Image (cartoon, rainbow, N blue to C red):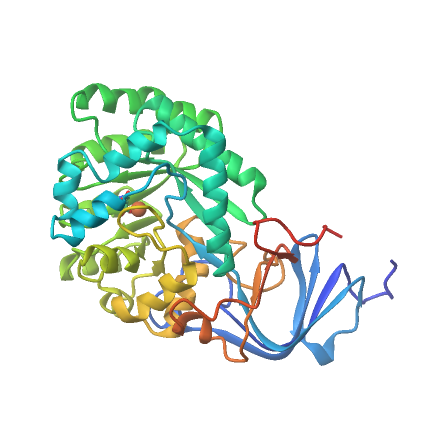
Length: 422
Ligand code: NIG
Ligand code: FE
């Protein structure tokens, strides 16, 4: 189709956008900017090549579109970014659940060989196709709740071969998903019998091979009494950095051991959990650029204090929120519900939560083309059932998005693009 000179030609034009609400552009937002949202009334949005090619008041549109979708006055926000999930696992944790409900702490279950270690055994006993299929089903749930970018960690493979197999499974998920999947190598727990040998194998074989094969661009390490010490974590992170990987940490879940300072010192993109963080950690983060990622599902599931979201935002720390979907500490299958919980558990305000679940989450993943809507961004967007966008972060378990679009195409359950690309 040829356009008149000076008028854009797009493959799809969304019209009837009652209210489009978005962070202003890429990059982590902090302090007052964490609640700064641009609102455009009666807007139109043009898509070309899966990206936003035009955005403005509908009355100003002068171009031509191959296809027009009228949203009937509904609200539109960017697709959510879920920056921390453990989507690929085998087995279940119902035995742990019974024990925890009977009063046995999560850390004691782990020390006895249950918890994460039980999931490692079950995952390693599962076949690859089964793992990929189960992960895609879980991804559907996150997408139905509004996620169009999902980080997925390995971490239940434990050995070099086990973790490489999980990264391969994540690649399988990525290949079949209609949304963006960001793989991360997670070094979750040390081998209790061969700690030094395991660490050496991770440094000398796992990290180099995962990076060389392009299976991940990111490395995560769990710093905790039951997992890696600060010194061990630093060695692993240094190795990751030497292989060009972006860094992130699980830190301060049960004990503030110095993982926050380590994340800052190593230039980590994000430091996640922070349930045990206090004023010192908040002040340290305020002086750095590392995103603080809150996981309110963990506080709820394990009855831990909420990470200090309010204090972090007030101190000017860029804050993100994630589901941390996993079978043990956070069986939370909805990214928008994680945002809704952050209002209650971490005391974020609705606008802060939306920024936390979009552009700040994207910054935590090193992505600058998702989490906001404007020319050049991926056309990942949510059409909401109500005219007011706050329904997305207020409701507990609903109302979910009316429709989810990834790269301008509608995604239905089944994780597949419901419409053929133009
Ligand atoms: O983010 N803290 C460690 N890792 C996961 C827990 C995974 C699990 O319980 O299986 C987390 O909470
Ligand atoms: Fe986690």
